Amino acid sequence: MRTTLNLDDDVARRLTELARRSGRSLSRVANDVLRAGLRDLQRRPPPGPYEPPVLGTGEPLLDVTDVGEALERLDG
Image 1 (cartoon, helix red, strand yellow):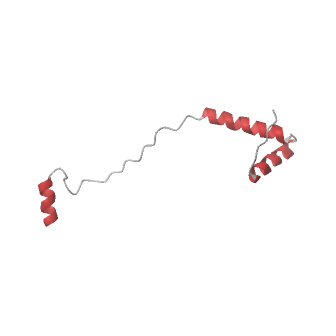
Image 2 (cartoon, rainbow, N blue to C red):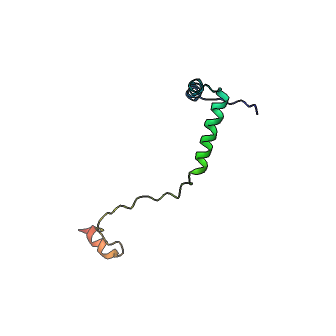
Image 3 (cartoon, rainbow, N blue to C red):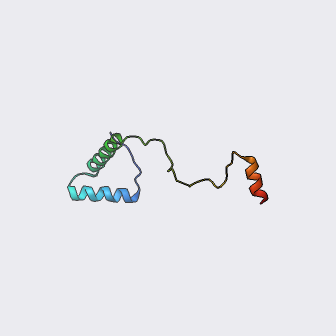
């Protein structure tokens, strides 16, 4: 199948260099690289949900369930 792709300059340079070194056509190298990338994407498991790290903050300085104590500490 013929199609047109717009490649970034760095990608085109790398593909062209691979083709030159391997003696294969640019189309062949591009197909091989795309196949390998697609296979790799299929092998990777999808990322799980993000779980933030749990940090130990020590004992609370104020018991927020006791409003009276909180007010006393605020008043000094």
